[in-house]
Amino acid sequence: MNIKINEYKLPMDKSGPYGITVGPDGAMWYTESRGNKIGRITSKGEITEYLLPTLNAEPLIIANGIDGALWFTEYKANKIGKISIEGKVTEYDLPTANAGPYGITLGSDDAMWFTEISSNKIGRITVNGEISEYDLPILGSFPSMIIAGSDGALWFTENQGNRIGRITISGDITGFNIPTIASGPVGICKGGDNAIWFVEIMGNKIGRITTSGEFSEYLLPTQNAKPHAIVSGKDGELWFTEWGSNQIGRIKSCGEIIEYQIPTIDSEPHGLVLGPDGAIWFTEECGKIGQLIY
Image (cartoon, rainbow, N blue to C red; front, side):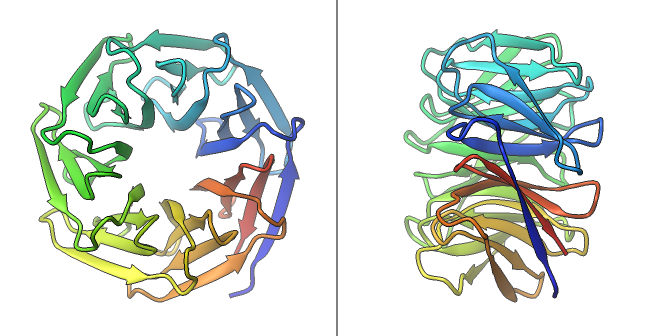
């Protein structure tokens, strides 16, 4: 496969871009964890930034809401934020102190669901800002990324619990133990095959689990690659970032893996998304947004 990687430098060198998604306006919206901003980049590389009201909020993961806004977690501020495509920011305080909100996604009930790493909970917030929280059954699970599955439930990684968790919209929680011990799961997504795919940052593998709980695991070619985030591509394949090896990886449904080197050394790739232009867009914590055209 012939690929080309473009990189777009952000105005602030140490802005720490982290999460990224496609907004309702067709542009890519991303968080700046150290710059304390929400950014927007068009397919032509035009950048706009919006400063958050709360200082040192550390925005991390960002996702589309049913209301046309982009919703995001504010890890240090202990808030859930949302931003309109015009740039208006609203923030909601979490009931639990020092909860450590991290992952966030739109649920089948039109509410936003999010993880609380530090408080060991899954949270839910409506478009009106009403918040509910659900305790995980096992302490120290460290819930990280979360997505909506094909079964209408929410699926999430338990980074320290070494499980893939599942919560229904009514709050019923179950978990599935990952075969690899201490695998450190982080990123998670729904594949084109309706299974749940995830990365194992410590196990150095890509994992797959069906909605009935059956696992498959695929070892990465590069040692200590530290895969971080994963997303479905346009042809049924999955794409993922390799934070430790400075690469973007691609895995087919059959398990074949190909890796592509990022031009900037030590770019620290994190979030990624399939753009409306058919390219894979990804954040580089070094202060750039990448575009992989294939």
